[in-house]
Image (cartoon, rainbow, N blue to C red; front, side, top):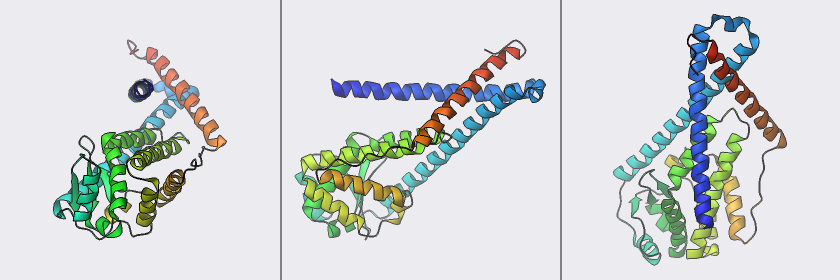
Length: 285
């Protein structure tokens, strides 16, 4: 029951965000119409400020979201090209580790010296691993890593995380938006670690994480990640696997207050734009 409640809450939150974003963009379009048709806006400072706030926030959000989407598409294409151009037979050690976990998603193997395992693909996520993974880890370590990635596949985490990044990008004018996206991404990693630890062991997964972190990263993956975020994520994940509670990070109070103030300002500006539509010929709202 609790899982159903959480799922319903998540869908409700995304639906609410989608409606809010659509309304915001719609009001930005209305603001453009008002600027074009109501020449007196330039002599009414508070109306001009309201229109400017709506336009600036919507333009910033759409630009940032488009940049994140373009980067995601570029990263997905890079991994797809890597999977096609460097396909390799599955090493026996990886086959043994996957067999020990039971039936699961297919694993694509590419020839690369850098050890890695990653879940990619939005509608049909799959696991991509390198031949270097077989050289860097034991069978138990590989099994722990594959169990972690299987959790990402089962919960369609690439699609979830892209949605979170797009939402945070659209709200780039909120100081706390980036922190929220990083926090949600970390929660998905911690959840996958717990699932993998139940299938294998905490010690094997922790050892595998530390081993992979000490080796050179694949350039195709490193380009899409922040080194600082990776370090914070690794610390929290190892802390959890050691049996301790990861340190909870909270945004600075100044960011929370500033975000609340910004939301209030944009909301007031949107209401003003809606009211201004009555001054248009025939009224639009």
